[in-house]
Image 1: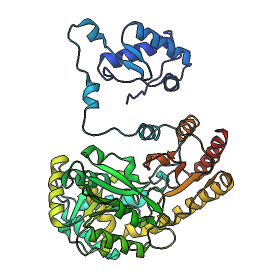
Image 2: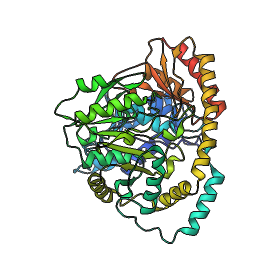
Image 3: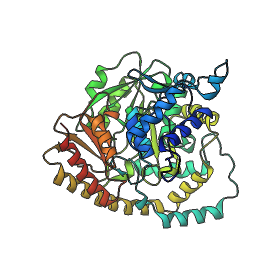
Image 4: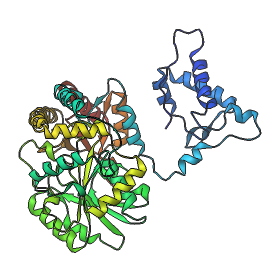
Length: 481
């Protein structure tokens, strides 16, 4: 996707359209914008450049006249030449063809837009699955880093499975959840996403099928699809994935089940213990391995959730993923994967081939957070703050959405799964919200079909923005037919 972080100088004697022409020509000439790249729509260009649409049209017309761009029927405006290709008999490489033939699939266009708009100033982020900067434990982090600084003698590469010291601490920490995992069965990864990537590369085969809840966070990624696998959605009820539907969708191509049984993303559902037991029993009989994503476990707000599936796993059929990204800080980029030692050895070897190990400093920091007891103290404070945020969001929904939507009250995690009562275009709603300074996460990015849901997060925006953003969102929804 073409990125634009420039605006014409309105105080310059050079006409605005000419400045835009020169800017685009420079990007094309230097190869930053390659042949076959698609320019943003005229409306979006006008917004980026902060000029009238007529100014953009004038600039594009001149670039077309020079043979640099071309309008494609139904395909927008494409870069077809650069200044060198117009002068030389041998055309330059068509990088776009390389991009389109790459193995890893691009994100959905709306997800790309979300990733871009999250860093736009003054945008109210109502769907962001991350802790607010207001919740960052600055003083505690200073204590941790000061302590770590006195202990570190080197920041060299760690062993393939990660820091033994950190793995020992995680092994001990997880006993509170009745997970008995030796340090040898733990792999330190750079977040849960890397764990999924390693699994897709290391132990699955192209053409296989991965079962998952419908909707699911995994649908917003292409981690399995890019490795040549299919993700098949299994419907949910108010207690999680429908186990009978798992059996109906098993075939020779089915490789494993990916599930988020605790504070599910995006619905917030918690699978009860009896259903967890049933799920384990069914998957063990079918010899279907499970990936358990437990990213939100520490973020319970009412009562502690049931034990992880891994706690009841007697046959090594569950690969268990944990992370610090949701509960402490996304930028630390440390998570862990627990499984049978041969699997962990295999994935550790692949990790060494991809990044040669996660950040040593982050591993030291996490080890200090947990071993010092500060992490548990911090979680108690964080839960109280998240309870306040959840209530602000629920109050705003009751005030502004009671006649146009239904929703759940989550018992933990970050998300409220909102369902609109009237049929509207969710894509139109998304871009209209963006135009009005509100960023939402439409439910279709987590589903395997269109829906009328929104994932509302109470974890990121300030309390004022949360209330004001939901008010504005309800007003925009009411304007749409």
